[in-house]
Amino acid sequence: MSVPPLKALPLELLRQRSSTKWRSYGDDVIPMFVAETDFPLAPAITAALARAVEIGDTGYTPPRPGIDRDFADFADRRWGWRPDSGRIRWTGDVMMGVVEVLRAVTSPGDRVVVTPPVYPPFYDTVEEAGAVVERVPLVDTGERWELDLEGIAEALASGAKAVLLCNPHNPTGTVHTRESLAELARLAAHYGASVVSDEIHAPLTHAPSVFTPFLDAAAEAAEVGYVVTSASKTYNLAGLKCAVIVTGSDETAAVVRALPWEVEWRAGLFGIIANRAAFAPESDAWLEQLLVALDDNRRLLADLLVEHLPLARYRLPEAGFLAWVDVSAYGWGDNPAPYIRREAKVALHHGPLFGAEGVGHVRINVGCDPDVLREAVQRIGALVG
Image (cartoon, rainbow, N blue to C red; front, top):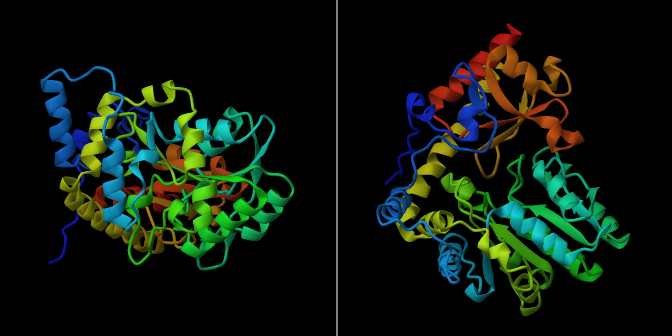
């Protein structure tokens, strides 16, 4: 039996939200920039949070909140990978976890490889950790984007101490293959480097692509790898601070245990409660409906671009609800998003913030009602007559 797509909430209700997506611009602008989605919460999350409010469960996060076991169970169900719950810790959000791990595995001035175009906070996070960004862009094969393993090997051979990996990749939606991740793990082990893998988009992998957790890619990954992830992107919980840090060996687990104690205290109790409900089996059916809705929308965007912006270049993302679109052919400048927002009243993410490879690009959030997506692309298409 086919799974029906999850329905987005109506615009009049969404505009009552007080989050970044709905408070950055006026009601005349369609907001499709930040990674918030327009769907109702999974019922199990709503129930868990409502119960917490009802009983005033608004205190400190407990020392053993249980999210370690819940994430291990979720990973086992989704990907056939069962991390040791004793090697799972928690913190406020993925970027908090990333910067703390980078601080632990690098020294000030060390170089950290990033693979642009990539999520803009990656650059800031490396700098916050006291390290220096080393850019090794993804390779566009003409069919998909891939890690430049030769370039990464050169960077590690010349002394780079870590790789900050986006798996799946934001903004391209690339799901890195098991083979490429295994080779990355072997390279890092050979050169004595660490790999910190942001896997926040993993539950949103679209078939037939298959997500591979970095720590499960090869035996060497357990020696060098740190996974930081959260339910926040999939279940729209960014405002409820919680993420998990996962390791695969006694040595890497000891590194995480040695982080300052307040790293764990940064996780909010509501974030823990919501993430546990998201990772529970009761939310699996909701996730399947969400995946259908996002699959429909990523394909709808392709059709809309052909109709309204035929010179745009777009490749179906293999994961997530973020579309990476090259509109440079229309001459809207290196950073087309401000022009589009001003003239079409559609707010998109600024391509150049993802790196030099983002010149002429925009990132479009398709986690919305199909009619909203249609209106947005029609508005932009009207700019080209």
